[in-house]
Length: 129
Image (cartoon, rainbow, N blue to C red):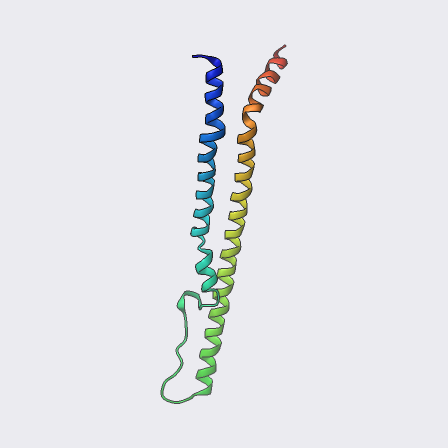
């Protein structure tokens, strides 16, 4: 096989086909992280009670002590739910940032790698001399 056509074929594969595949895979990772942590659902239900734990209000008359007891328990469950959801959102954001940064680093490495391979080989040959 002709070395020039091999070099052209490799260059086309490296900078066209595989680069498009890499970007598609990277976007799939970002999509997966977004759906794994379900940011939209967590934000919609931010102040919902944790695990739907609520205290029912009494029927058949008004009892101030039972009413305020239920109010306090329901408020605490909403605060706990908000705290847990905020923590999950923050962890999801950390994972999203890690995926974005590592994807960008690997993207740059992928672009530069064909230039680095001959330099690494030449450096190894020079060390042998």
